[in-house]
Amino acid sequence: MPTFEDRLTITDQLVSALREAILRGKLEPGKLYSVYKLADEFGVSRTPVREAMLRLADAGMVRFERNRGFRVLRTSVRELQEVFQLRLLLEVPAASRAAIRANDSLIEQLGIELDAMAAAASAHDEAEFMARDRALHELILAASDNKKLVESVRSLRFVTMTLGASTVDRSRSLTDILAEHRPIIAAIAAHDGAAAAAEMRFHIIHTGTLLLNQLVREGRDSGHLDPDWVAAFATYDNHVN
Amino acid sequence: MPTFEDRLTITDQLVSALREAILRGKLEPGKLYSVYKLADEFGVSRTPVREAMLRLADAGMVRFERNRGFRVLRTSVRELQEVFQLRLLLEVPAASRAAIRANDSLIEQLGIELDAMAAAASAHDEAEFMARDRALHELILAASDNKKLVESVRSLRFVTMTLGASTVDRSRSLTDILAEHRPIIAAIAAHDGAAAAAEMRFHIIHTGTLLLNQLVREGRDSGHLDPDWVAAFATYDNHVN
DNA sequence: CTTGGCATAGTAGCATGCTACTTGTCAACA
DNA sequence: TGTTGACAAGTAGCATGCTACTATGCCAAG
Image (cartoon, rainbow over all chains, first blue to last red; front, side):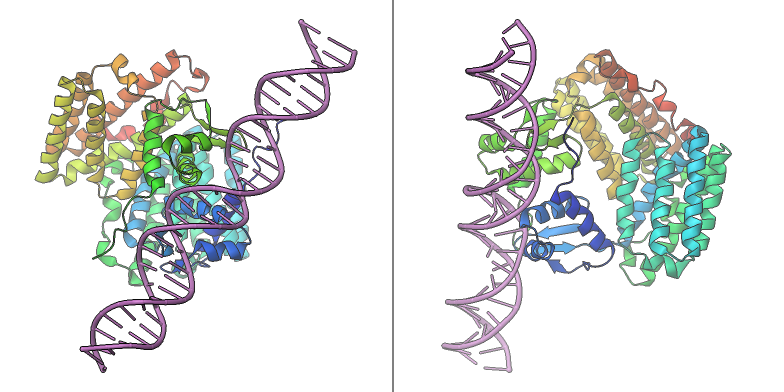
């Protein structure tokens, strides 16, 4: 019997906990924190806290400053723009491929996730809704049978999640977002690759536009925003629609 | 005067050194190593070695095994296939965009890199050649003005580099590879996005096919190879050509 | 010759010690 | 008042100590 090779280390648990803390705003962007204090707070030694923060630093969520502490990084307009450009490049083809490869099992699972999203929307459970949203997108990505693709988008999403759930409420209702997902699922179920790509494209562009506009309104360095960010790779992937 | 915030930590230096050691085959895939011994070898303490290896573990190059050591991971056929699929999704549109955005400065730099590649090919300096190859691809990617795009492909490339320079020699000559790059650069210089995309697509597919076939010939788990890997997202991006 | 148990060596993971460095305070001084 | 400079507090980075665990080799029992 193979002993539990997969039992989580303290470091692993802290990665999740600290990332969650950042996403929930418990650790404020721009502020200096120290490994010492966090270790105290979590009741563990400094080592696992430091190792966890190093991984988050690798992911770009945080930056160590020698002999001063570490700073939670604020998501810039520029960065968000880059994330959505990459998501377009990855998720649109993935939607197309999901439509082509879709079997009954996938279609059923997509339906279940969609129902769960609807339920969460009705209950105004924003956290649950966003979790289901993520799950739905990952299901579509996973259909491509490319683990690195799934992992890439997952890490990209952490960046936008830093902006917080607050964003959603103000720009559009959960029901609106839900409605935007339906045609994607429908196209996949109909094995219509082109339609699935087009709908996914519309969805990501719409979401990105709303988030970017909000960040600019909030006065974040709008100087770096390319108003035409979405057209960046358009001459390439416009051919799809 | 701002004090050197950017002076490299021992950990940073070790990340480069250890990655290089893996790429050069100094650390053999599948074999168990220990932080203790490596720390001794490098004349530093265990901590920076461990932190560096954790970063490489994050990148998927090694895996820690509790109380046993860490293992350098062998690149699987499956993994390589995933890498080339992602590179197609990212680098083909990037080539197109580079062609559209290309200014005289970029075109000149591309020419310089191409000349450097030619010189390295003539001198049969394989290491230099591959370094220039990387630089050329990154130049094209950087033209998109998306740092995360550059970083994504860079990390994907580390995976294929594990296979070693040995691969190149057997499958095709440096001159052949060089020849494949010329039309890409030409298309970019001509501001022909569609052609640049098509040439980049051909180049990546060709390289990927050769590498995958070689791995299969070497007897690595060919069971997981989808002979049609390149067609995976074809229904999507075929529209480009 | 095979099997089983036990000692031994070696390891990751975690805790803690140490050092050079940065920053803020506050008193001495111009 | 404004400036300087010694001093104290706090930190990341690195070194080292400690523990529970795994693999392995050896030897005795069968």
